[in-house]
Image 1 (cartoon, rainbow, N blue to C red):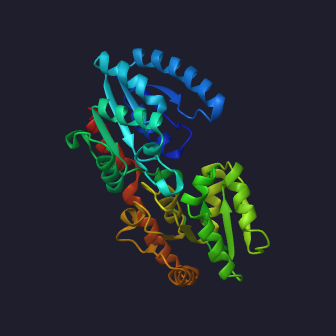
Image 2: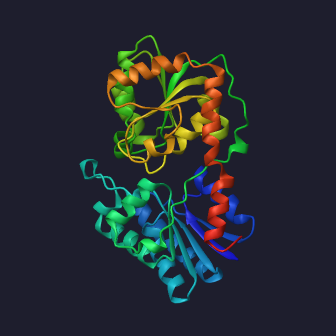
Image 3: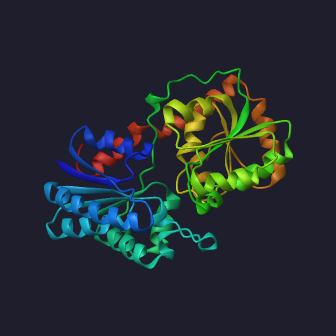
Length: 337
């Protein structure tokens, strides 16, 4: 089958679906990243023209998130009776008015998002939390919604967890906007670092406005290292996971939490907030949900003392989210068995 896939194709989770769908189908790809302002509008126009052409060439379209970029291809696909598949689990199903975060808060963007969902033949939320948000924010027919967990390509990480040189507490965010800085809980991470002056903390991946905010908030905090992004996952971020004894994700909301599982695969103990799907994806593991400063500090202390066998258990838990599990369900849903 010829499939037009549109989404943030440089993201590891989209790359995983490209691997899955590319095994049995011919793919036409389009990167949905358009930027902001006047340049973003121009990029959207150009992208839309390319998308029209690729939609006509395809038998189905596969949208990683509903957004500005997906409505016109979905309309064309519907008119010509091509299948429309949409993965839900990002800005499209986020609604955090307290920080002005989520497509629902932007009228034109929401128009594109909700109508992409309405046109879709099948919608694949990446977690039960994302599914709940989708159904809460839209009036889509639940019968066309199938939750399929996001995944990690375990084979790309190797199986090594033992590392006697674990040096720091880590958090990763490749955000470039103040909203992402707040949503990811980076301020809270810095506050914890101020409490534990004898422990090294590392913030990796921030860019632009988010990076400047982190530098401002961490000014004169000697035990924090800030590594600017963008960073390559396997060449730069994975080595950081392997050198960390704890990985913190204090997000207000996450519809999945790929970085948490990546850290687990590398033997780092996740310490997470109750935000969105985070408790859901680590349920049953040794990872820790901690809201208060006291609980977070206690969890960091525990993380320092984890044995290699305990870190191995973290890795084994993350295997349940291997790409092969998503592949079986996803190909079945789109008719490739």
